[in-house]
Length: 121
Image (cartoon, rainbow, N blue to C red; front, side):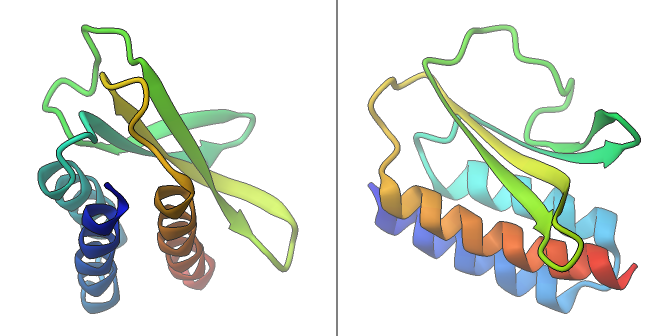
């Protein structure tokens, strides 16, 4: 299962590195992951706004889920220097047994790159 995540994350990472518009980068990440990984039924990127989190990009138009996920990953986007969470990548699936450790590590690599981009802004 995780090979698709690796390929999708590489494609998303390439878009992040090429695109100077940070909001477009977030949209590219969610669109690419959701489109290329069949068990990623919903993908969102949240950014910290004070004490709250704001959904800045989502793989569905309404940014709402009308179903309950059976599996979910929350990958923090962290500023390693200041030791603080900047946001998170959230992936949800209807399949309860779909994620593995490679999915987690690949998404962590993508989150790290997003944190680097956020630190530059």
